[in-house]
Length: 171
Image (cartoon, rainbow, N blue to C red; front, side):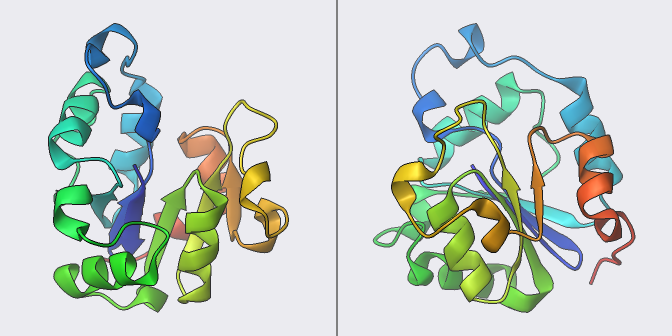
């Protein structure tokens, strides 16, 4: 699930779509460092995911990340579009009343990161443990479409990659 920050707002990707299935509580566990990092960011935050909102909300609860988001915007909301289609991002931006250039997208898909960057968003790519993550998506390395690259959503990594995120004012 991506999340987004728009100079006061964040769109987030914290749970892979393949994690959206029954028995989430058996394999999704809270990491207090992630919540601490998200709480340290001054922006309003939204979840943007290609999975259904119901499943995304269950995953957020299992991860101990509920209560941090303005709204969870998923497949039900974006239908008939989905990421990385520009129409999906435009629908979300219109809904939250933000411009792309005022937003930061945290994402684990190069396709989605590339689209957000082409629209003018600041992007943070979240690398997974799979060394081939994004390889099948083409378009070059994550550094070409990311303003920052992190492997975990923790304060130390995010401050090292993009310290300005902790200073942005909400609008």
